[in-house]
Image 1 (spheres, helix red, strand yellow):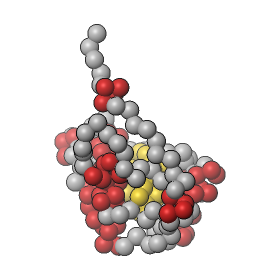
Image 2 (cartoon, one colour; image 1 turned 60 degrees about the vertical axis):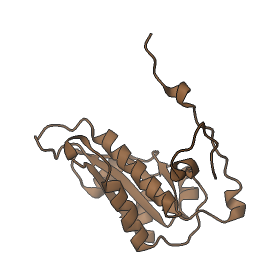
Image 3 (cartoon, helix red, strand yellow; image 1 turned 90 degrees about the horizontal axis):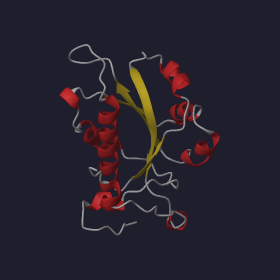
Length: 181
């Protein structure tokens, strides 16, 4: 799926989209490691690298994450072979102060993750509708760890299922560019 844009940009950006149709083909362990490695290369304030990832590959681990999702999300996400919980550590910093930039930096890591997945022939979809409070208690982690999203990762579904996907329009650069009054 290739978008028509105002000018040429990186191939993976032009083809990336959030799918709800996954093949049940497994994600190769080497690819998963490379995708996570790409995420760790994102820039971060003070080089704190606040992102944390919980990777669910087994049916039990995936089911545990899906317990905290909205029912409508569970229907389509179950077929994705890998789920990755994206989190950010706001408190473990170089100066002991709250890291205001954790969400921003973890979002950047998610961007790197999805582009590397696309480069390797995988597709992703990040879900934000889940019970963060109860999931945090499942992991028994401190309040310093903020849970941001659950990424479904896998190969795209067969052609018939993928044909149901609707390419969502993107805003132009002019539409999102702030201007002074």
